[in-house]
Image (cartoon, rainbow, N blue to C red):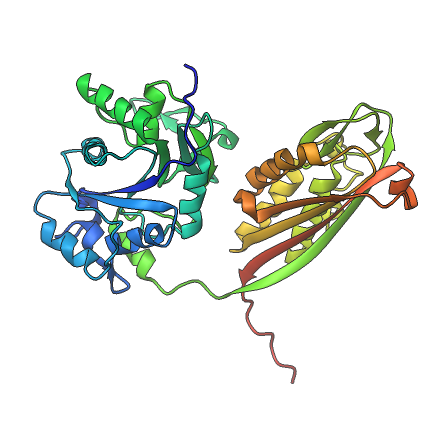
Length: 408
């Protein structure tokens, strides 16, 4: 079906679903009202929306009989953007529909962010990412994370039926962003046809034929479901993270060809590059910057040009390896900065595609990736159009290492 056009200037509402009973969490009261670090889970889930000025209205769907618990959870917030709560239904799907109907009755139109109250660890940045994910011709966008475990599908007997390719799988989070009217229409259609059992609103939109876009989620944005989830959330935090900054540099000479690869994007050009892999100077420099921040050598250490398996290899594999090395050591990438140096091709027309590709490979938000381009004023090998170069800077955080032993 053709994609609907969305008004990006329309208001934004957060719809926080807190009507579940949370029986798997093993508590007498619903888990969204349990204290975590001295504050109710629901209150913590609301905080990032309250901290985001773009969110103009916050509606909460609660369970029958939870009115007093809800009042205690939001006591003292004093924010006029929080509208009176709506009573939920028997299922999450029912509760979301009832919340949407309440917003519609208030005359709301625009973008709605649907969030589960049992995810209290989202950040203001994730809320902003959800808001900006809805743009022209986008009616649904959801936060996702790459799957690191191998996933198996079972048959009816409990035996392995299939091992789906891991690189095409993601885990899904909330808040999920939607154009309000298409989402409400889809919920009404499902209710009228007796279609139930959808585990999130994205699945409902898929069923109705709407395309669903994705944006980077946050590893810390876990859902509190079982008692061990609360135990993990209440456990002492990880060791402090220390900042490391490192640079990477790469250069390739031009050769025969009709394109170059830059940041994972194929850019038409009257020359190619001389390289063992695909010769992507941008991704090579970024890979070296990350490996340098880890003090784990450089790209040639892990992917030597003498090894024939890397001949013609796509360089996003090298960057993905370095990204995984950061995460395997309990670290996080804060920012990637890249400067491309060449007389040609022109970088400007491809800048945003390069940023988006690097962000996707690294699992970062778009505003965590910067791309700049410059010429060398016709000086040196780049000025003579003999090749191109890239300079990258990576800012990461790693767990603070233990103090070195004292010398005797």
